[in-house]
Amino acid sequence: MELAKAVARGVVVLDGGMSTALELAGHDLSDELWSARLLLTDPDAVRAAHLAYYRAGAQVAITASYQASYAGFARRGIGADETTRLLRSSVALARSAASEVDGQRWVAASVGPYGAVLADGSEYRGRYGLSRHELAAFHRPRLETLCSAEPDVLAVETIPDADEAEAVLDVVRGSGVPMWLSYSVRGDRTCAGQPLEDAFAVVSDVDEVIAVGVNCCAPGDVAQAVAVARRVTGLPVVAYPNSGETWDASGRSWTGDGAGFAGEWAGGADLVGGCCRTGPEMIAELARELA
Image 1: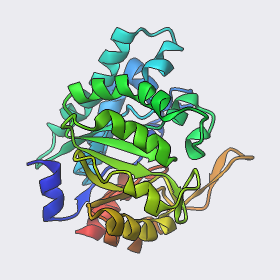
Image 2: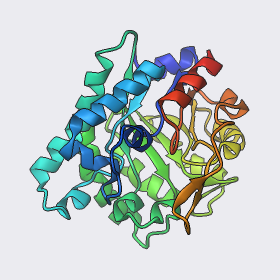
Image 3: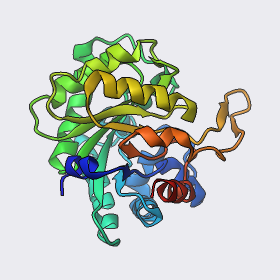
């Protein structure tokens, strides 16, 4: 069954943070490639993380390609052919994990923002100083490779800026590959400061978009964003916020806890999961709440 048809029949549960699952398993991700490094050094760990989420109740696994790109791998001396193999493997690893569990499972190929490749925090600000054409040129080779790996959907996620969203849409338009578009937000605006009404409106003429929404945000930001997304686009809505913990940049640590993660915010979205600091146990709790 196509993912879009499954969404029409009821709420679909996404996985949680790939990096969180890997860290819980003891992997050090203090690297500018972040979880994408393990596509190269320990692909079995990536597969195991997907399997843990599927077994926790996730119906969709988001691949470890968020921070993977031709430019990022090139800085490590990895050529284009090997980068193509690594990107394609990200989809294959999730597909392999899905084969070990019962029931319908889907694979979403993660497409992170340009700022993620810079590894300097600009993915939470946007406004990179690049034109829409330049951003499209950056995203195109990775998108084409991921599409060739035949995921069920592209997860264009944590996008901080509507201009970057439009650049990605320029590449995806006409491809025939389903995608969702998910912004990182603060309150009722993108991280770059654009009103969500304007940000969600950019998908209006792109048939490939099957859902819009938010991720990597505070749980408290979800409900308003979900309402705006549905009103502006009429499409299904995707939401996968962080745990509710807060990042302390000075102390380089997370504070608080995620006790309220599986709360009322999840009620209005059609595809629901978690992002930073949400592991398999939280997804299992969320799946139980939604059931």
